[in-house]
Image (tube, rainbow, N blue to C red; front, side):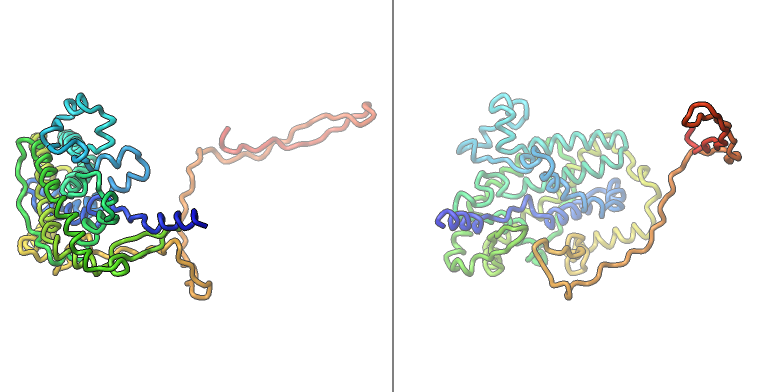
Amino acid sequence: MKKLLTTLLLVLLCPMFSPGWGYFGHKVITQIAVYSLPSGMQGFYFRNLNRLVQLSTAPDQRREIDTLEASRHFIDMDHFGDDPFNTVPKAWDKAVAKYSADTLRKYGTVPWVVLEVQNKLTQAFRTGDTTAILNLSADLGHYVADAYVPLHTTENYDGQLSNQQGLHALWESKLPERHIGEYKLMGKDAKYLKDPQQAIWEVLQQSYGFLGATFDLEEKVGRNFTPEQKYTFSHRFGKTRRAYSDAFADAYHKQVGGMVMFRLQLAPATVASMWLTAWQDAGRPNLEKLLKKPISKEEKEKLDEHLTAWKKNQLVPNSMLLGQLKEKPVEAPDQIKPAADMAPPPVEAAVPVATPTLPVTAPAATPEKVKEKTKTSNGKSKQKVKKAAPANDGWN
């Protein structure tokens, strides 16, 4: 019985993990990054805005199938001592020589992954590979955005080492989802990065500097809440999980909301700058030539409308954030309804089925009769039997 209670307690305390910014944050950052681009890139990226926003969460989804994916989203700088930014070499080959590739992958590789993906994006621009440009732009934006999250720079990424489990999802998902209307989303325009390596390491160092307040203010706000007020519990996929309550999230946001907004506000310009740098390093190819049809007058007007709303911080009031669009609800896996309360299955319209193309043959000729001799059981008498030859089935 004691063992059962211990197991139940561990399950109840299991935090709800949410990778970098949550889906909502990544969608917002990717969308705003498009607005930060120069005119030579903006038409192509705006035409593909919906696709880019959709792809912005792909790296998190790959965690389920790629065991190496998780380490690409963070770097535990506190593992490398009290002065990690002067200890860890910035170049990958020098860092490997000092710590080994396995060690670096264990404690995170996000700065080097950013540079790797940016180099691949540069090559995609050179070859004019539209699919690769979109996929790599989304991936690059995702990893850069992750570097803006303080909790992606520490081994205590979810507060699990300081009895603050669930802090990850609270900071990067729940707060922006609940308070995005209070944020100033207009930001800076993209600029060419002479040293992308230095740029991404500066982002990480700034994020690392916010860690103290992230943890300390959670503890400060928590003094005014009982455990029953501070946490909520949910049951999904057969597991009970603990998360911070809405009341605590709102109180915590009053303390750290400015920090969360600041990091989310800065990320899009850096994402766009990485895209711009890759494009310029590739020779500034004409991206509109990669489109199947020219940018229309209506598209230009729509882009101008988006840019105006962005500069006036009206994206949320005007319902222009794609990340806020409601998706089709999914039935909860553990939800069981009585048969009487369940709607009958929808009747799907008949869909024409394509008929496989078979080899074309001439019309079958009348089966030819063949004479065959057989013997009776006594082996003496003979009789003739007429038997039709097999018809041509079209494959011979």
